[in-house]
Image (cartoon, rainbow, N blue to C red; front, side, top):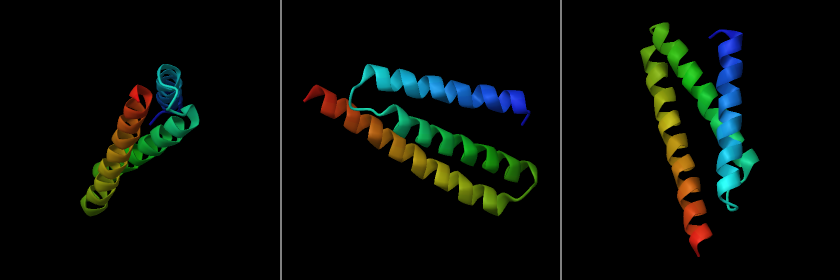
Length: 85
């Protein structure tokens, strides 16, 4: 991935993290940023593995991405629930 594209990708995740933290006091911007960065790193790794034909490792990373996405969904859900009560 080109350096400029990677920088824009991470800048976008910073903006999303800041936005989410601004709309719900139960969400921490730094926690969102850490989850987003981890997600982006794993997605980039998984894409590289697929392009290199390393399919077994690609699948393993894909499952890690899925687990992390579910953790992000849990954090989001808990924030929504806690904000309402």
